[in-house]
Length: 85
Image (cartoon, rainbow, N blue to C red; front, side, top):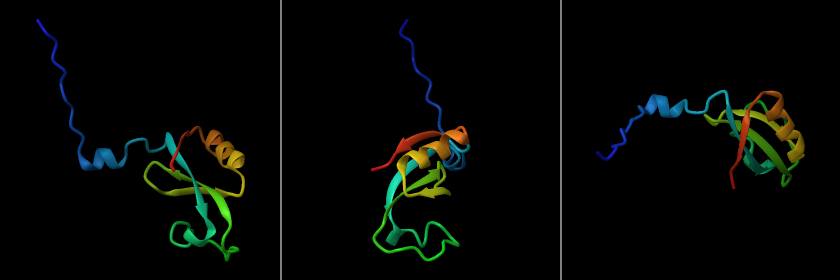
């Protein structure tokens, strides 16, 4: 008898919290794009390329001028990182 796979459906709320606390995404950003994403960010030189680490829900975690430091921050918080291009 063939085996059937049972589909499981996630609610919008469950999907919104998928990976929360365990997954973060790393993204190269321009200092020009940061004002809305990092509330309370002090004035920063325009045109700089930086690395931002965001939680699975899009919440900013940290900002660095070096990719390695951003990855180290993820490791310190036991987060699995994924890259967004």
